[in-house]
Length: 380
Image (cartoon, rainbow, N blue to C red; front, side, top):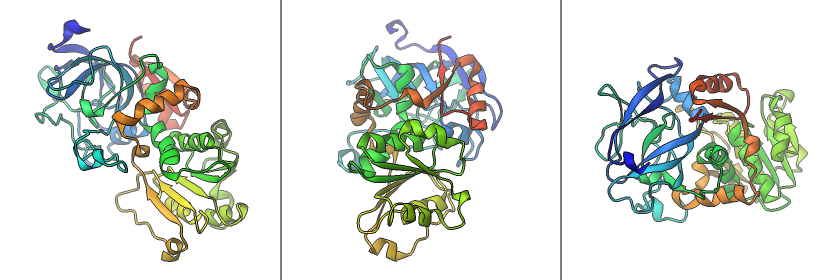
């Protein structure tokens, strides 16, 4: 791949020209990486609900034409000036958030919310010069969350690239660059359930199932899945969920149901829906004295969280998390190693696979609520 360094690369990309319309496979030009940037060849990418949300223009500011995609695995093709810890041929995961290693957040052991590279869904250009690296006939095509992996080649800030074990299969570990790590880390890094403890997981989508997987790894004795869709319960057993509660089946608030079946509440809860009522339930269902609730889902911008202050005074703890508290460059390699040592099972998250030419099928699966993760193979 070195022969293409410094040159514009022509390749295929799935371009979203307007909200909610099928993506179109186009030939795009991908400019070389500038200072502190990496150009990579994407081999596998997955579809995450966040891509669909912004493609439908339900997010902040609709920006088109755009290349979506942020959950992927690939190989470094070339690097820009100032990039020293990556070289062509390295196996990498691009990540929607970053780690500059210089700001107060990156230097803190408690935070992963990098000042420079924290997720920005509105920005469609590179930080270096405020321009896009993608174009068609001279017309710029916008980036998405700094990754834009629905392209055979993409350019990413070096702080948003995690170098991983080259023996790790990219068609599997690509899903660790977003949702799976978010849920897993929410449990292992933030909730931190002890062996034998009880954990409630609100929302059994990909992130919630990953949170359950974290509880399984931690050795929780009871993992209670909470979801409005009872069809999800059978699949959730594969991720360690031991029992299920559908709030629609009960006349009383679900937090009261959980408190009853756990003798006062669960030790830990992880909320993965973004629904503010579920967030309140997740907090109020933990045991007083030691219970910890972790919020993962992103709520509606006008949502308000309400609970009685006594719930806090009675020594319940409410926490939030972003990307499972993982620092992308420092921590993701070790998450990949959990998979390599068979501590973490990734295959069960992958329910579909399609060639790049059929990327719109992945959107159909997501919109119909079929499966968990669909892998898009960039090379036919």
